[in-house]
Amino acid sequence: MKAKNQRLVLLILAIVAVLGAVLLAMSALRQQAAYFYAPSDVAAAGAPLDRAVRIGGMVRPHSIKRDPDGVTIYFLVGDETANVIRVRYRGIVPDLFRENSGVVAEGRFQPGGLFVASEILAKHDENYRPPVLDAGKGEHKSSSLK
Image (tube, rainbow, N blue to C red; front, side, top):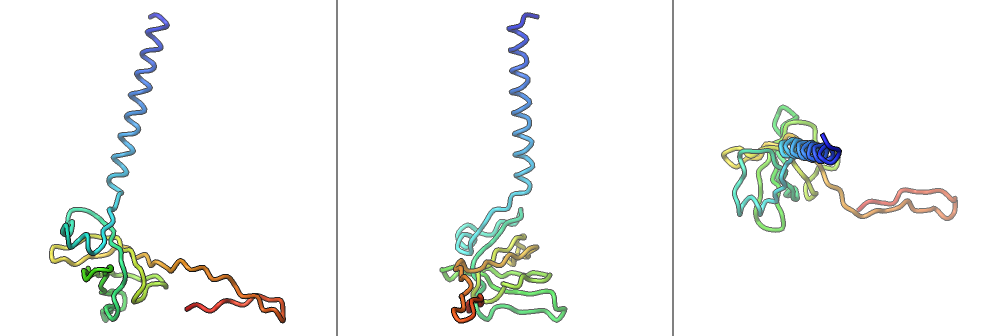
């Protein structure tokens, strides 16, 4: 085989190998991907029942209800519109999870519209408050959180 043909065969094999690796990686990522929906998106397009998704919004005031088992909670997630999503989660919630705070939940929608969360991520505000320096003693004090 001539050197020119040998280089062409190696180039084609390299392209096929790279293409195969890219397709394999895309296939693996597609199975792990969770699409993000806001309550207004769900109201407009309907709840996707066939795959794992993430929803996000604010936990509505006075909506957190706990079951007697101590680990199952129900709450409502809303956005700036009047749309809300009913959520059920079984497990220990993050420390920052509370009413009027941001939340991202990963899970699946049930046929009745209930979102069964497998993971809850509480969002914190993005206001950084550095420690306050006490001028008299030269020590740091924690700033008050509002």
